[in-house]
Amino acid sequence: MKILVTGGAGFIGSWVVKQLLNDGHFVWALDDLSNGRIDNIQEVIDHRNFKEFIQGNIKDVSLLKDLFENKFDICYHLGASINVQESIDDPRTTFENDTIGTFNTLEQCKENNVKIVFMSTCMVYDRASSDRGIKETDPIKPASPYAGAKIAAENMVLSYYYAYGLPAVVIRPFNTYGPFQKTGGEGGVVAIFIKNKLKGIPIQIYGNGTQTRDLLYVEDCARFVVQAGYSKNVDGEIVNAGLGHDISINELAKLIVKDDSKIQHVKHIHPQSEIQKLLCNYEKAKKLLGWEPKISLEKGINLTEEWIKNTNLI
Image 1 (cartoon, one colour):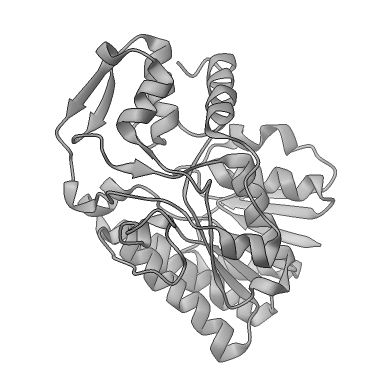
Image 2 (tube, helix red, strand yellow):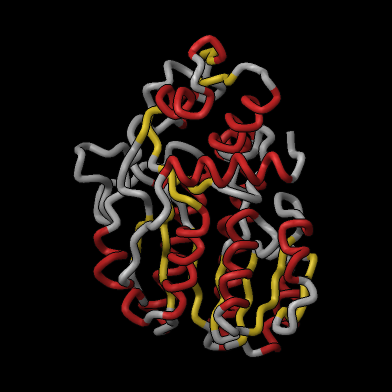
C-alpha cells in the first residue's frame, strides 16, 4: 500500500514508519520537526520503499492537497503538539495543531477516500476507578487544553466516519516510552529518569509521586497503531492500548534508580492537569485486532537504558 505518516519523524511516528516499511509498504513521512527529529528516521531514508520525507505542517492546506495527490491507501495521523504542560501555557498552538490540523488532514482523506488512523491519547480520560482498567466507554475529562483539543479532533474524525462513510479509527495508546524518545523536559518520564540516573543527578518527581501510569513499550505501541490501519474491524471505533498494569511514579523511580536518596519530590507545575490513576483495559484491542503487549516494563526499561547509553544522549 501507499501510506502517509504525519508526525513521521516523531518518537512513535518513526517506529510506525519502520514497521510499515518492514511490512513491505511504500511510505511518505510528513513532519515539521517542531518535536520530531530527522535522526529518528535516518536509518530508513535510503530504504527502497521509503518514498519521501516532507518537512511541513498539517496547518498548510496547499501542502496537504499536493501531498495527497499520491493517492494514499492509509493516513496514520500522528502529527500533533503533545506537551500537556505547554498546552496549559499556550493553548492556541495546541488547538491549531491538534484540532485544526486534524480537520485539514481529514478533509484530504475525505476528498481522496483515504482511511485515517487518528492518534489520540489516554490523557483524555478521567482517572481509572478500579483495577479493571479504563475502558473506551469510561468517562473522559479534558483536564488540559491538550486533552480538550484531542477530544475535539476525535469527535471530528468519528463524524467523518458517520457522515461520509470515511474509514476512520481513533486510537488511545497509554503512556508510551522507549528508544528515540526525547530525554529532555518534553520527553517521557522513563527517558528522563534514565538520563538523570546515568548522569548521576537526582530524579525529580512532581507532587507526592503516588500518581500511576500504564507504560507501553514503543515497539508494542507501533504494532498496535499499524494494525489499526490494516483492519476494518476497528473502523468507526475508539480503541485503547496499554500494558494492562500501572505503576506509581515513586515505584517507577525506585525501579530505575534503585537508590531512594537520588529521588526528590518537587512542586507540581500544573497539578490541575494530573490524572491520579492511569490503567489501561485493552480487551477491545485484543478482541478486534488480536493485539496484546509483548514487552514487560522491566525489559522495556533495560532496552531504553541501553539505547540512551549507546546514543550518548546523557
